[in-house]
Length: 287
Ligand SMILES: O=C(O)CCC(=O)C(=O)O
Ligand SMILES: [Fe+2]
Image (cartoon, rainbow, N blue to C red; front, side, top):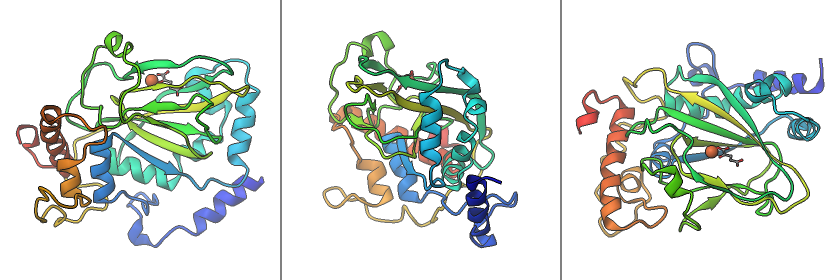
């Protein structure tokens, strides 16, 4: 048994009490809170810094550095340590929170190797125009090394996941106010809505920048919340002018890229529909 297996086993032994496990035995101790769920609806992404076994990130990065072809969907067969990433309790709990307990890990995955001294990638959405008010499909972007601003980070535009835009038109946009370069620590797993606008910066360094993309999907609509939900969470006053840090007021008023009133007003309605869908409210689509 190698060192990583040993560490995986010792982690398994320290799993929390039964109350924090689902019936299938999965550790769900990292379910998202109401605030984290609302922030996902508003921003379209959630970052997880994974406490992977020592040396695992370096080993994955070393294997990727040495790979001279792109195995496409078979990347996790070529770099099997990647299974420890998508099996990590924090990843599984976040996915169960956002996509339901029986979410599916889809067969598509891809190694995005940004070669040294290569240019930026234009803004786009990965999904195929099947956009609506729900959270049905997510990308998981995993980075096994630190990502600096010079290494060609993925750049996302928070809150754009509910917006349709022709890709050829988007590609002509330059700097968008509020864009977030994913400058991250090694071992970060970024969950993004499948429709979130994103691109990359140029890689101005002599090193390869690695990102492995996974795709996850909801299998059925929620009948009840699948995260760490407090049924009274929305029973607070509307903060028309005051602090907006609680889930209700973040959901209504959060404006991560400072859009104008008209867009914000429309988005607010979509967010509440999305929230009601996640709660399992039967007629949420007409809310
Ligand atoms: O390499 C990246 O950071 C993003 C790549 C990407 O968005 C794509 O290929 O669709
Ligand atoms: Fe993309």
